[in-house]
Amino acid sequence: MQQCEERLLTFVNWPSRIPVRPDQLAKAGFYYVGRNDDVKCFCCDGGLRCWDQVMILG
Image 1 (cartoon, helix red, strand yellow):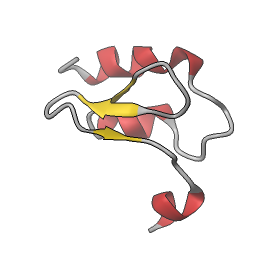
Image 2 (cartoon, one colour):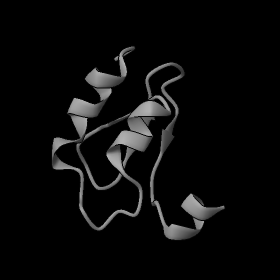
Image 3 (cartoon, rainbow, N blue to C red):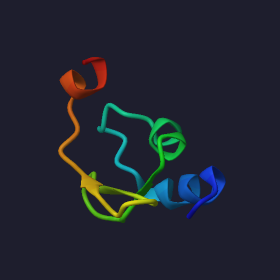
Image 4 (cartoon, helix red, strand yellow):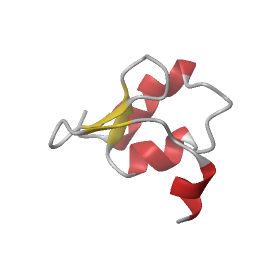
């Protein structure tokens, strides 16, 4: 999962209601684990979930 293109391929079933785009997440080092809106970092295996607009805009 070190390549951004590999990570982007994991987002094929990414829910459209989530306010963050798969290309943004893949570029930041995350891949989709295939459930809800859960992603993991390819480097440290840390995970994030429950995305909302406030998180994206800061």
